Length: 430
Image (tube, rainbow, N blue to C red; front, side, top):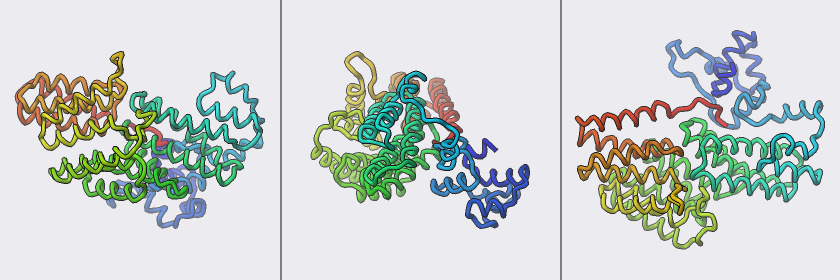
């Protein structure tokens, strides 16, 4: 039952509740607001010859089932539900803010909590500023920080912000908290997808889009569509990607997210072999980028800066077979991604740049250089698995097409397959 809840397989939850808890589908139907026959369809065994049973994937419907059946939020990867907080409020005493430090140090969310409690109000401007700064810290850490660390911190942030939304707040504060939750869901979607949690990432992206619509925040909506475009790009769903790009442009036309959308369009066009669309998209993206001020924090994941443009052009020219220009941009990406002390400050981009150099080397007959670059890229500590594997597949295909009998080619292919086999991580979605 715990496994079914964690995986949001509510059909299995309903089936187990009937078998082991003697809870009828009629009672479940009444609790969650679904028709009894729909409950039955969701709960049927997948071995009965009727195919895959229906699944609940929409975020608000997941919440309806969780609340209807009184499933504790943590079992489903959610923050504590309102009815849980009501129960705990009857039995727990208010904490002294100083105990937060005594219990192991104050993190970015604990600081916001202490600021809130010092004024004995539901929320205040200092706490809201602290939350915003915490989100910015995580977004600036995204290019290099450990994905597991980012996932944990982002989930903590979501739990804290949603808890504040359940308290007494003004309309302005409610919108600010909604916007904070939207940015956290966006970041969570990126980290989850990096870790191979595709279904969970889709839920986080959908939650961000819904929040953007509710809060009337065009930039959040546009980034949600940008993430959908990224997902579609790495899954070779070209038309879905182009549709997401257009939806993103409609949502926002003033921030740097538009640059990223043009870049995705160029990368998809290159994979479709449309050189003219590649050039048009790159030109439009560059023009938008040139109109924007240079950011104070270019490492921020949701801010596109001029230094990232080499990365996009590198990808497009590699796919078009312009190896010389692709390699030139790749070397520039590695240089920009490396700090003065030799530390890589953008390891994910550097890894894809090395794969690009590997593809160029393979096409020029330099197999040792190609495999050396590819192996180094796959060994990077910080990975965006879908993006990395997309380019690694290109190098793998080049090597197997050109050097099929080389032992090094087979070894590299096995490295790629090993990463693919370990890419999916069955963990809680939020």
